[in-house]
Length: 140
Image 1 (spheres, one colour):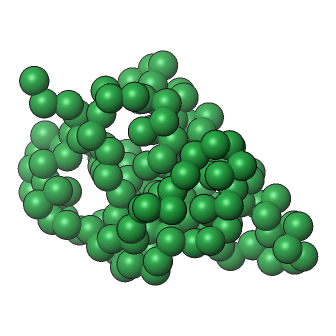
Image 2 (cartoon, rainbow, N blue to C red):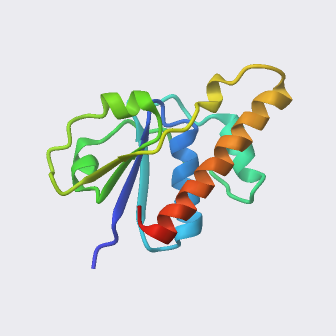
């Protein structure tokens, strides 16, 4: 039996979608096939790598990828993590794909001292973890 495919989408596939991808792989074990992509590929954000490493998750091997229409249409769930990706997500032709929007602030747009910016990355990381845990418990 095929595992459900979860496709996390964001604008640049550099922070939020990378964190969601990593959290679901970490917490969901082998229950899902997990991929992430963006409307554009902005590269992996070093601060996202750092905050995930703080909780013992290594995302250094992740790549920043552009949305693949084939993967999009074979997904079980397409989950957008930012309003821009939600509004500009390519058309999903497969009517069986379930599309959800889980909005999170963009930590890459945080301002202030390095400590304040990192605090925003940690907050988003922890919010995404909580949302993934809810999905795993409730299936929605």
